[in-house]
Image (cartoon, rainbow, N blue to C red; front, side):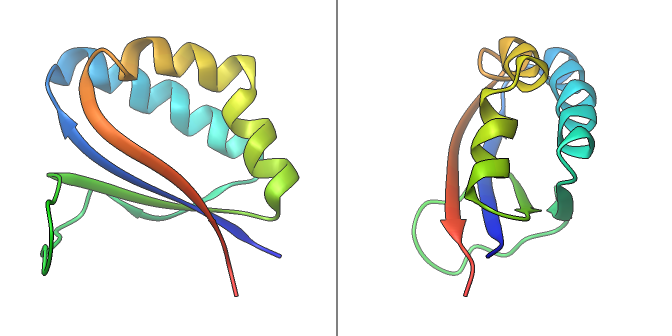
Length: 94
């Protein structure tokens, strides 16, 4: 069953975050992930929102967790975490 990553982000250092985005995109591709939404226009209807929102799809839990733990994505996070405030959640599809 598909697993989705929902990521809500406020970028605090655009230059460093651009490095993250490039590395993260390559890691997503390596694990056959698919971007369904990536930083487009959004409208926050309830609660606290973030300026940037990303939705990814992976084929299953094993792949999603392997992606997140991979050396490639961990390298990306070295740039992304200090350059943003964010929430990152995996959720099982229906």
